[in-house]
Length: 222
Image (cartoon, rainbow, N blue to C red; front, top):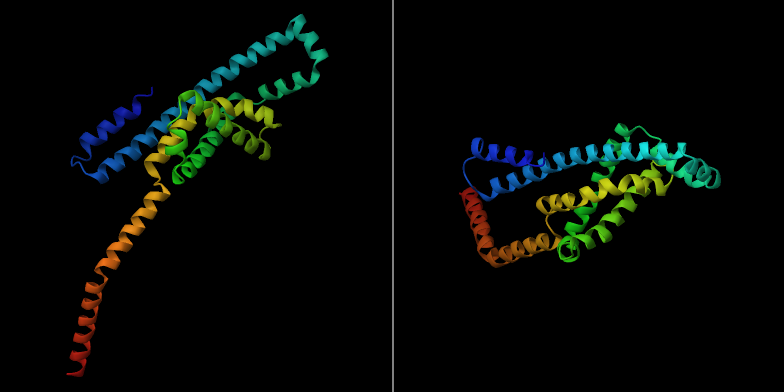
């Protein structure tokens, strides 16, 4: 399933565009990132729905047992929290949570890419460190957003909903940001380089402008 975007990109390369150029390669990178994101989002929605339904069935089965009934009597608050987690419809919930997780991960990725955080603080770390430091942190942000939007009844419930989609999507969102967004250092370097070129060639440009002005004034006087 995850190979679909590779097949589509290969088709576009072979059929639509034949000449290799930096612009074409940039377009291909964008298409590859977008298509891979669509495939991963669909995969996350499917797996989230399966896990959610499985956990919901196990929880309902547990409540019907004698141990579960005794636990519900002794710990009504904990039972209420778990019941809130499994109360929504799985289809709407999986689409909603995945959408907000992808949106938050993309926004964070854009900010991190622009300010050199991905290259300096994210990429050098191991996968475990990336998951624990960045993945869980973004999951809390998604949970807080879900709570503020009144989608989740509490931040705890929102975090339980958001942790799997966020951990599955944030790395791809960071790669998408690396492909599409330049770093602020690159922008400043380009501005400085162009400014130096303008300053270096300014006398020549000024002389050309003055010559054109003199020619126009001479032609008018004649």
